[in-house]
Image (tube, rainbow, N blue to C red; front, side, top):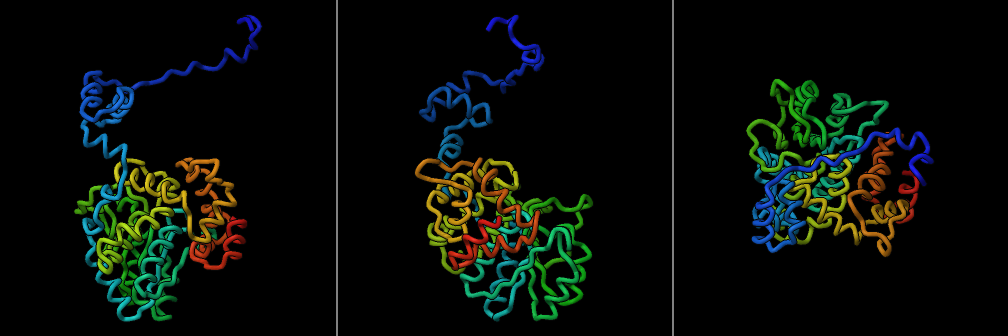
Length: 337
């Protein structure tokens, strides 16, 4: 086609230009030599701020050692001791989550861990239209009347100032696990412990964990105290499946610890075991024989289906999906999502 034959609208689109990150070529050469990498790979890494061989190896080969100890998080010791006491005394623990992918998967992860340790757990995920976001005093009052004395929030709670005070007046112990930023005035809710790497005074290295990531840290701390190092090699990998989905779906930066979580989680997702997860992946038409799972699949094929429960109806169905031991029910819930 000659230029004169081209439709007018074809020339009306603005030209697009790549904006390349500038860097000194010599830095890429040094990295390529030090890390024994192709120059093109070294150039990409340098453009991303990676200049040492150690950083390059960590970036290119994610592994469990890149996940930080949960006990580096401010408040973790107090939280673990209270949950351990609740388990030992046979208390019912209420998990109070959010209705999105991050919140519902956080409930599943922490519920699973506590039940593995012999604890008794109930959960509440608010109805988006009927209850709205966050802690509700009425729900806390009902839980207290039914014998609950420990409430753990997941992916919510940092701005529940009045609800936290109400819980304290009732005699409810509150543990807040959340990744949202604290109030601008640095006010924190009244709680037995707050797990949030963004709170003042917390030196936890990764500040970008999603809510499920922080819930997983509490789960990991509890399991590690009970089972030691085997928790990291035997139990943690199975938790990374759902955590990878939550991390991508919540749109937190995929760098550092989050990048390792997603990379390792994608590897584990290639061999799903849980009935609910298998059913959901079948509904999403993910065929591992023909398709290698990527972060795109988590963000645009699995995440939206999980999110649909809280957006359209009752998010608690997500928790049921990932915890049911009934294959028929799992298929039914997955199809509904």
